Length: 204
Image 1 (tube, rainbow, N blue to C red):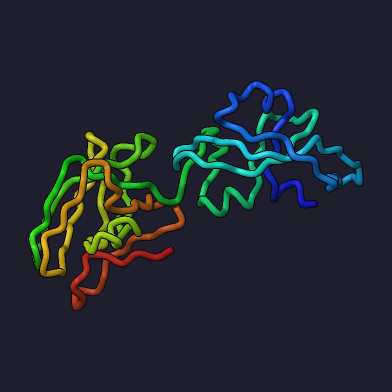
Image 2: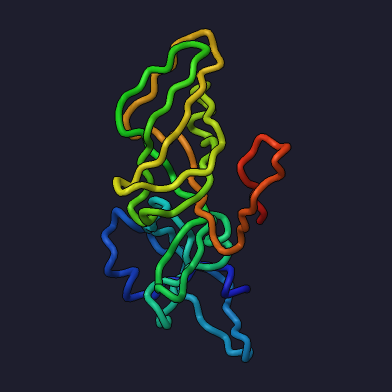
């Protein structure tokens, strides 16, 4: 069994969790074999509820009598949630962050509307990134203009909504209206050719 790909929780930490955040222990027949061929006995497996900046998730975990840390998240979970570990700041970040609506909005048929959306608190003021459509917004029938934006002091970013339908569309405060992907050193912005209509080009 690939220990790095699975989630592991210590028995003592599992016991300390409230019943609302865990399921009962199920017996297993698998064993974890370390790189030095040492076998580690598994107490059982369960599902626990965790909270990271990306939200609350139920994850499947294997329970060990002892573990180097109370909870170890495997690469399968980290990749599926697009979670990035920043070891320099000992923090958890995400390649994308949700942008939420701050007030109720009605978008008229065949019209555009410029509004402000709130990003997560862990996104820093002055951070530049790309805003694009969220699956939640697409289900409502609305679209947004994909754009490069900068987070202001209120942790908000400008969003241009487009209603291409013939009906009014209402969205509520707290709805996810976009996803924000912060630019990192993996991106490079350069001036575009004057013959193009864009101000810059972005490479990843």
